Length: 104
Image (cartoon, rainbow, N blue to C red; front, side):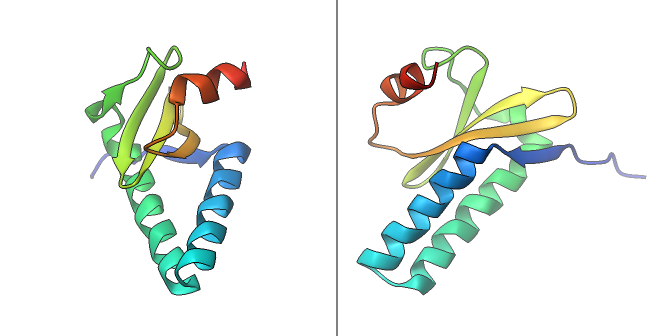
């Protein structure tokens, strides 16, 4: 029997980030493109359940943080005992240390 996947939980602020991404793309392109962008981010996020250690550790941004690229967004996440928590979804051009410093 295959090993059961861990859970991926999206933090409230990460869900808020997704809403901002959708609104941006719906405004500058189309709702269909916005939907596609969120599908790509969600798919990348779901891969974290089985491959969380595969991607980059981001201790320079915040201790215990890791990230994976879903171009042009970076999904920041933390490993938890029962799975993975997606902490933020930020555009790759953002100043990540500054964003996380403000959250402390």
